[in-house]
Image 1 (spheres, rainbow, N blue to C red):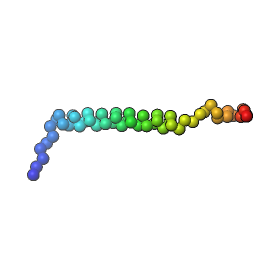
Image 2: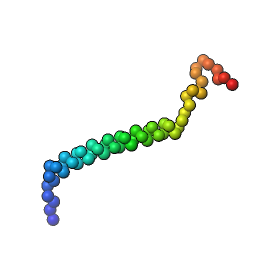
Image 3: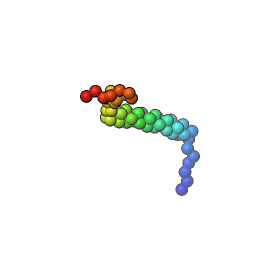
Image 4: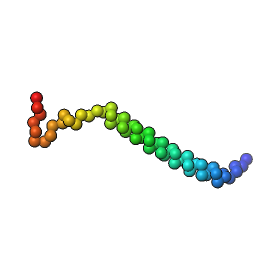
Amino acid sequence: MFFRDEHEVHTRKRSLNRGVGLVLAAFVALIFGLTVVKVSNIDFSEVPVAGQEASE
């Protein structure tokens, strides 16, 4: 049993597929990061500033 050498077209397509996969992974990571930030919903307007007392 023997394997034939890959054609140049297959090599180029593999390279293109890896590039598309990396772009897709970066997009998914970006969406995940934005979702985590939005869900955490930290309200920075209520954090007291140094030198000011919290109004009650």
